[in-house]
Length: 183
Image 1: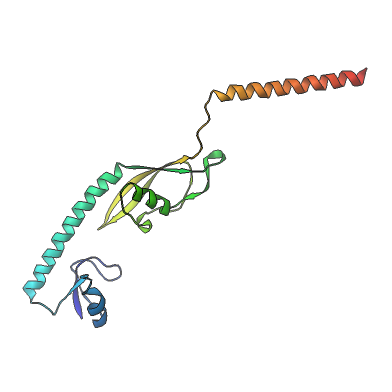
Image 2 (image 1 turned 90 degrees about the horizontal axis):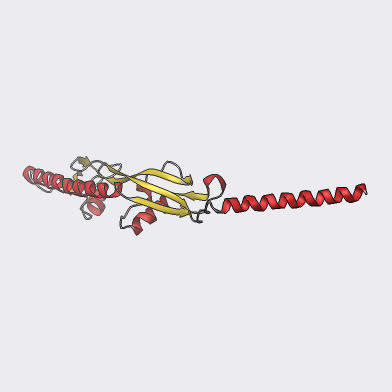
């Protein structure tokens, strides 16, 4: 059976294309879900009208996705994670973590639409592309920070002073021991 696709379907075709599919697939899946319109069900004018309606719907969807893309590109997602020395994470930040944080901010995205080449394994700021649909992508800034507060720089001299006291205490005790052994 020949049908006209109402929207883009992976492995089948783009919106507005005329494709030939099995009769049962068209009758039981595509047509009831309004994913396609039967080619034999209407005259040529009606089919053209359907194509124009589909194209208009697609343009509206693209315009909405463009607006969402602009808003998402201004967005910075902060993810706190446990980190060790040299800013390496214990574990990693995956596309599922990013999807959860985007959902919390009001953006419904599937983890599969987040195009993260490999999981993030260190602290820093990353630009992650998110596929919104209809060929539109948004680049979201992901800021991976440590969940522990950063120690204040004022504590460092105190640590150095304690280290010096420990060294002087050790040298005094070794001097005393050397004096006692020589006597």
